[in-house]
Amino acid sequence: MSKQDTIENAAINNSNEFVTLSQTAKDMLVNTITQQDRDDLFLRLYVQGASGGISFGMALDSRKSDDDHTCTVDNIDVAIDRISYPYLEGATVDYVEDQEGGKSGFQISSPNADLLASSGGAGCGSCTGGAGCC
Image (tube, rainbow, N blue to C red; front, side, top):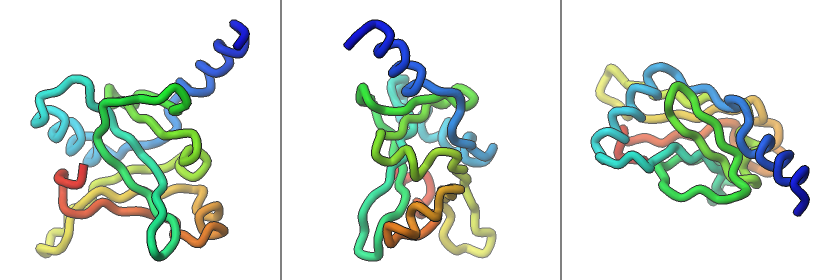
């Protein structure tokens, strides 16, 4: 790989913010990462296959791959693998609290829902059960 290829690859993989985190999601993520007492954790977003098609997922991770797209949103590092990136570029992560005792959890929505629809998936994903789903 030439030096120019390396520079271009770094520019792609470490782009400007390509996801949005709501303030509630940022607060929950910071709290969860702090509780883990580890400074190597970051937010990983991904697409996953399910019986109903494709959906979004998220987890706290400590290992990045060379082909991950990465960015930092208000001091929270975010990574998306190269296969999931087209589906999740421009996505919004929110944390929704159900005030009536129902399920609370993270929700991921993407403007690229049409790509998922053509793959048999839905245009949003959720990670219910509070911070424990990370």
